Structures are given as structure tokens and as C-alpha cells.
Image (tube, rainbow, N blue to C red):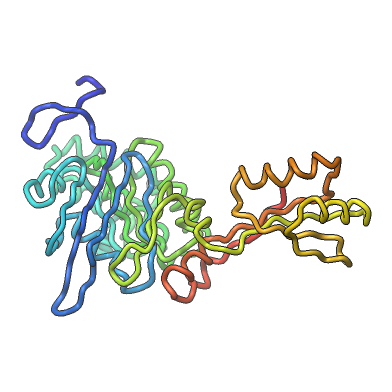
Length: 335
């Protein structure tokens, strides 16, 4: 098949869609409560997209709609080039879903869980065993594969859960808070698995409350609050939405310190520490402007530190929620 075309839902061929998932005005209510209030999302193919928000924001509902588990009340959505309202079977054939609660059956072995999933995907016995064996190796579960899944650690169950999701070869995977309850080591292992999936060409739609997780993994992030998208973009774009960024310059010579203060103008001075703090959005253009002004008067700082708001700040400012304690990050990076 030519790489420049892809099959459409009616079997003809056309240009490939750059988006694995897209929604326009997606709405959902339960009873009288609005859960999703007209959300617009765009998830480029072959990327990690993180839907970030506090409990009750509507993250899981969005995943359930996009994975055809529930129907939307209004709006439009396409997944893997298929319209949700007219081609739900096409969507289901292209996706895999790992929910907040493991689908692993603890009464049978890891291998039996994999073979059961292969049967559900109508793979032949030989093909099912081949696929299961390959995924068990990939997720480092061969040694435990003959043991009941009930004996697995939380991290092992999560790895098995995702391995089961991959049996059908999905192009898009929805991971609904996949690292909740995992210890730091297991969480980092899961991050590596997600990165490897994307390297293989899979699109990952991730919901999470862990701010560091979104910062580490996501190519794009949307912040969902009370059913509305408060903001979306790259992590760096979101951080620049929040005021408070600055550059701090430290000098060892009082003369250089005073000359820099004079050259830069709008600065906060600390005469005892010989430091200057300059408001800055963290962009390359702003930083270059500061350095050019110092070069023009022949001054070089002994230390330059850039502070930009992190996702903790973004989350708090956009949702008004307290930031999860698990997601704290350093806020300053020495350059």
C-alpha cells in the first residue's frame, strides 16, 4: 500500500489524517449534571497526548466516549479516521483501552490471560501463542507467565494489562490513569513502556493526575476542568501562560553587578547577594535579549538561572484545585 494514502471508512483511498483523535464540541451529561461541556481536542498520530485534570473533571468520560463505551450527547469525534457516530466498529478495531482498574483475571496465569485475549481477537491458536509469547517477552513477564496473576505485583499487573491490550495490534491506545497506585520505580517502568509504544508508531491517549507524568511523556497536554478545556498545548506553551517567570543573574564583582543593573533597567536587586531578577517568559527570544544587552556593555554574569512556572503552577492557576502532592517538581534550572 502506498505510504501517502490510507483506506477510508468506505474502503476507498485518500490522504492520511494527521490526527489520530479529534473532537469538536463534544458534550455529555448524566442526569442534570454536565460532565463534558463542548470540548475540542486534537491528537496528532504517533504522539502522546495527556488529558490532565482533577477528580471529577470528565477525563474518564472522555475516554469512554472515544473508545465507544458510551455515546456522546452532542458534538463530533473521529478516531483513527472513523466517525464515532457512523463507524463505531472501525474505531473499536483500531484501538486498545486500559482503564483505571485492571482487566487482568487473577484466577488464571499471565499466559492464560494473554491467550484468552487472543481468542477474543479471533486469532488462530498458533498465532495467538506466537503473539502472546512475544508480548510476554517484551514486557518482561516470561518468568511469571505460568503463575496466577493474583500473585503479581501492581506494576506487573499493569504491564500484563497493557500487554493484553496490544494483542490486537491497536494503532491508538487509551490509558486511563495507568500509574495510579504504583510505586515510583513501577511508575518509571510504565513511562518507558509508553515511550517505546510511541517509538513503534502507536498513538497514546493518556489521562493522569500526575503532573510530572504529563510533563515527562506528553507531546501535547489539555487541562480539563469542570467539563471544559481550560487550555491545551505543549508543556512549555502551557507554562508560559502563567505569570511569574524570571531570569536570575548572580555576580561576584559589585562593579559588574551595578553595571548590569543599570544596563537591564527593570530588575529586582539584591545588593547583599549581588543578584538581579528580571521578569521573563522563559522564551529563547527573551533570554537572548538579556544576554545581548549584557554583551553590549561587556558584562558577564557568574551564574544565570531561568525560572519558568511548572505544571504545578499551571494546574493550580487553571483549575483552582490543590496540586497533587505526588507531582512536585524542581522549579529552577541552572544554565
